[in-house]
Image (cartoon, rainbow, N blue to C red; front, side, top):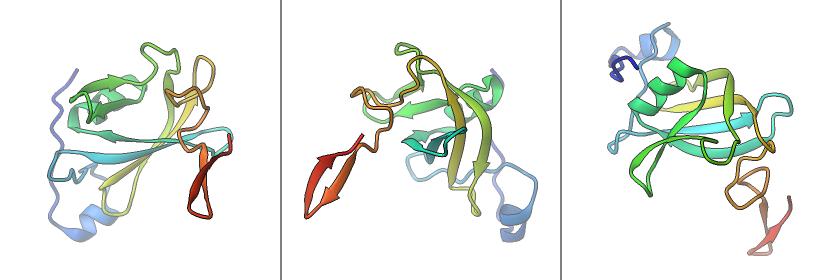
Length: 132
């Protein structure tokens, strides 16, 4: 794997309209990554990436995240078979969030609870109701 460092841009036009990938990691060294199914557009999950996870994703074409609870790099699907292969990777306007459009391997799911999407509950009248 190559060096995980990314450039830092201070010029707003270069950051927002330029061609240089310069993610703006938060104080914990993370950016949010929204992951969607490339075929359906369904939101599968929200994860976090540090520089190492983003670099591994770019280098391998398989989404890697940083697990805040385990404090370690995490290759999605390594144990579940739900490998997320990148179809397209986008950054938002100020490069502090990532959007990964993916094809999912295994059973096609993304959630460790067994649901396809991590967003399987709806708030109804203040209570959570499962809606797979």
